[in-house]
Image (cartoon, rainbow, N blue to C red; front, side, top):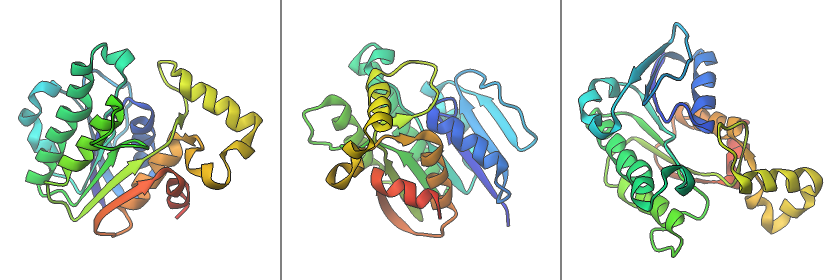
Length: 220
């Protein structure tokens, strides 16, 4: 039986790749995306819903799917304030998980970050860690938490750290070998592929997938 998927954060680097790959995947018959503004994507398998993320509970009917791919994420630079950052990365992510759990979604796949830790002194890592911690209060047959390193791929905005890492990984790839392999930048399309493979894997329970494991899962 073919599956249905819901993608949140479909206009971001990973989310966009997830949507494109789901469309091409014969195992999925329908992909729904909840977005603030139109993504510009069109396909017979794709349903785009423009939503107000502050009122996500009004769209709970769209959570009647097999798999939810939660790819929400912003930066302090874009969000402007810590409060706005937390609203997107924590509040919205937890609301998505709550609605998915209520709808008895089979698999919940979350993009977190390397270094996520609810006790971290780094605000970004702390919020990501709090999302991971609190999302565990909801029930899913499969909970997959991905912690990618710096991401490679085309974005609307320039992220200096990612551009620098990309340059180093090209010029001096040996820097990211041995014990530093887990810090090697990874392509957004690779993360997306690993997410879809995980959703189709039949694995149950909680899976924390660190950056150095994502590439191998993408080749499954």
